[in-house]
Length: 194
Image (cartoon, rainbow, N blue to C red; front, side, top):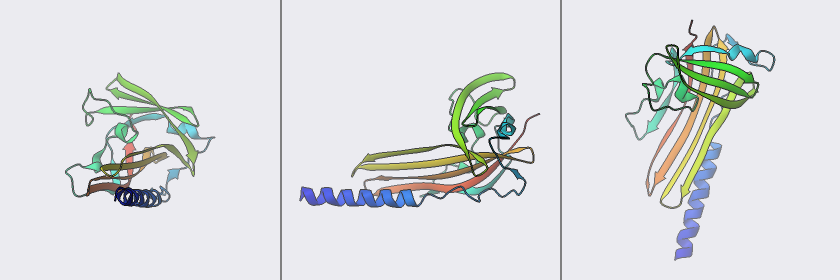
């Protein structure tokens, strides 16, 4: 009896993992703008600049199932770059400074007016004309009680003096027999600060 339950749990676990790993959409052909300046190792420095933390325009949506009150369509730039800080209002008038360190890393600094709040280096690589930030992937398997899989991808480029950020999110969890998921794709434009 125990062996049957254990083998059934293993089967369901492997089935869920296969479906999740195959079902993650890529970021190709996500940006709607035709004026994108594609990033190469020669022009990588064009990402450097100071940008608003609030988005200007958002295409696409990230949906929750079952519905939750969270609004993933108004996420600030600092949070989309996987950086979090507790001591300030995310929706205030902050600006984000990107400085090129190398073709594989960017220094991201957050300012409130002229006061530096935080700095972090993010890593990634240049691929298909974009700077792809290293994806955020994790899996928490406590079979059969709890399973959580999270996969998030972000890439950056420039168009018409705006920062383009393509964001893809696929996250799902299962607690006993109750589950939920968050998935979607967005392209978000952030204005350059003067």
